[in-house]
Image 1 (cartoon, rainbow, N blue to C red):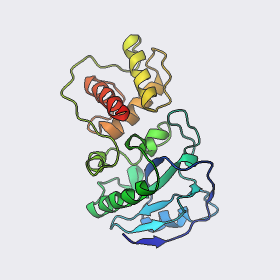
Image 2 (image 1 turned 180 degrees about the vertical axis):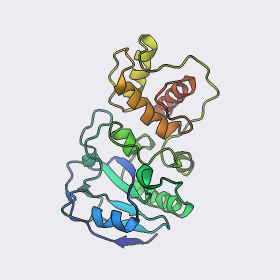
Image 3 (image 1 turned 180 degrees about the horizontal axis):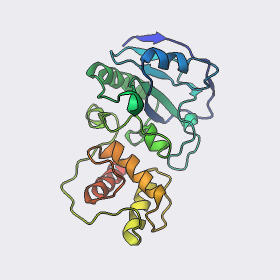
Length: 240
């Protein structure tokens, strides 16, 4: 695997070794425009790597440094996600400019890159996440078309497919122990969703982000039986 050096000035010092990977899409019309922005000191954004649609990998910031990719974010009590993560930008125009499936060469390059990154750092499968996981109120990338299942089959990240799980859906306006248990599960997984027993907008946002990653066929913020079953099985897998 060869890397194209494209140094960005947008980084600072880490306070601890990275133990998380955050995947993004670039959300710009071209990869060239995204690379220019990630290397522009006035933009004050960066990532450690950017992967073009044809599989070319650009190295922007050394892994030992803190790149500026996650912004305001949260996961399992950590609010400085940049400090504990490696950020990988994946070229895709995103929802604003013509979102589409990620080409095979791009995903193959990502898998090869993750093989190497995880050979250098201790990064659990449960901490390979999307930008929408750590910033669900602001972001939706890499989005519902990203092949999380394929990534997990290659050894990176968590994916579960439990048997059919019927049950009355939970949604905005609902209250009670079922909502409390849902919120507790989302919090345990990593979302900022402290249990209240009330299905308010914050809960719907977390459910939407969860679905975007782990149930992409139904991204509606409604916690139906399958969504809740996938959450339960993911918690078990994360704890294994």
